[in-house]
Length: 185
View: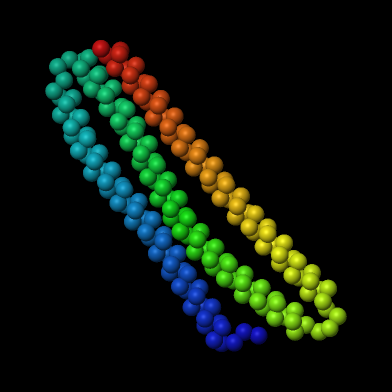
């Protein structure tokens, strides 16, 4: 039977976890806003510079060469922006996951303690039922750990695929830019 103190303590712990998760989410949003402001500020300066350079072009070939020269840095910056976005999302997710895993581990430990207490106080002759319950709990714990490992592996594969895709896009842009510069010259 739960006491009033245990209920209050559980509610307090749940509230602290909620606020901790909320703070982690806001930290991620703050990082995202900061990144977007930096990108907007840098882009404004780059657009101004490109416009001034375009107006100063003496002929069509010079304008084409200028545009081709802008293509590769723009693709690299877009790729870098994508990497930063991914890093922010992955970092925030890792923090939230860490808090959630700690909460689950704590709840699991309390539940296991309650089961152990119930088994110790069980009437004689219920040992096999108690062993069955403990076995089911162990199987559920193992299944949860397997799911967590599979989820982490899937996230690692997704990150590797994202990096490969980004690198391929940047290399393709570099090749296109070189071809465009040769054509313009």
